[in-house]
Amino acid sequence: MDIPYASARKLAALLRARKLSATEVMRAFIAQVERVNPKVNALVTFLPEQALKQAKALDRKKGPKPPLAGLPIAYKDLVATKGVRTTMGSLVYKDNVPPEDALLVERLKAAGAITLGKTNTPEFGAGSNTFNKVFGATRNPYDLSKTAGGSSGGAGAAVACGMLPFADGSDLAASLRNPGNYCNVVGFRPTPGRVPTWPAANAWDSQPVIGPLARTVEDAAFLLAAMAGPDRRAPLSIAEPGSIFSKPLQRSFKKVRIAWTRDFGGLPVEPQVAAVLEQQRKVFESLGCIVEEDCPDFTGATEAFETLRAVSFALRYAPLLKTHRSQLKDTVIWNIEQGLALDGARIGRAEILRTELYQRLRRFLEKYEFLLGPVNQLAPFPVETEYPTEIAGVKLHNYLDWMKSCYYITITSHPAISVPAGFTPGGLPVGIQIVGRYRDDFGVLQLAHAFEGATEVWKRRPALTA
Image 1 (cartoon, rainbow, N blue to C red):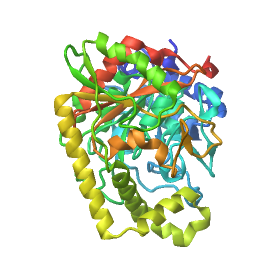
Image 2 (image 1 turned 90 degrees about the horizontal axis):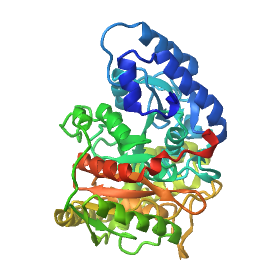
Image 3 (image 1 turned 135 degrees about the horizontal axis):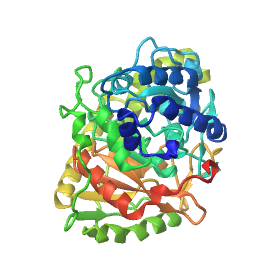
């Protein structure tokens, strides 16, 4: 068995049945990390001895095993891990070792996952190109000269390279969907509250979410089942248990109405990206869907998103401007200062705009069950480029502008997934974004699973892992 590229769900079943030992599984993943990670720089903290020790202990333990028992996980370097360095990609925290685990880590440890390390992220997760002054840049497995996306770029690259069976990520603007798209894996942004977050500077902030990355939709659902479910420390958490994502994903899509948008109402999109996606429209029709060109009105999305993001940056990081300004990257400083310059009227207007956007998309999705469009408006770009300043000849205004095709959805709180959809003529991955009704996370997974099964784009591995 090719353990590093085996289905996470299948590996877990074999481990529970003791047809595979946790030790041999862990050794296979450790060997893959040692072989491939120097090329892509996806794992930035690596704990092979600790992980192997835990795997051996698991093999000696008798009795039933939890669902993820024996599978490795490497947490995004924004997630607090007790006793394991958590830098947040920042020089300010390069030696930070948290005294306790985040809720996500507690939950996945309880499910049996074994910590193998931490995955790379840009400074404070700011920006969709994964690089920082602590560990450097993560490279795209399909072209080492290109970005893996971000801010969960380390996670996306690690999963694409078979260094992990799946991974956690977080998404404020695009940070699960972007690396999923750029690394030819699945990145799922669930409804806010589906995966509870603790600790959090603002427990009421519903824009950032945690979700899974995996090579297949089924494996993403498998990890989500262990991630999701309520917790009283997270007041926005949804009451439904994570077990709902353990159900089979098969479903008939005959006569299901789907809206198809090429550009989310006029955003610039590279022709090579648009061409790949246009070829896949017929796949949804072959599944029985009624596909119509239509798009909701996203007027106000940029103002609402940029304002509320700036508020969150000021809330979390403003003290660092006084104490560590010289150690912060320019875009982080800019975003904090944008937040500090806001007044109550502008923040209130952003909340009103956000409410209107939610209601418009809700009504739109009463006519259609899903909205389909690009994940990213351009293909992976050179890793040395901090962020794109132009798309298809259209000039961009700031480091967030190129993420609009994702953050237009973020601001509405609807679930969205990136699924591998094809490759450019130059061999770079392109994903499709599937947006579903509010809290219909399972429905989004079902359509993504059906599309994935019809195309099998996900099976194309990076050449560097051959």
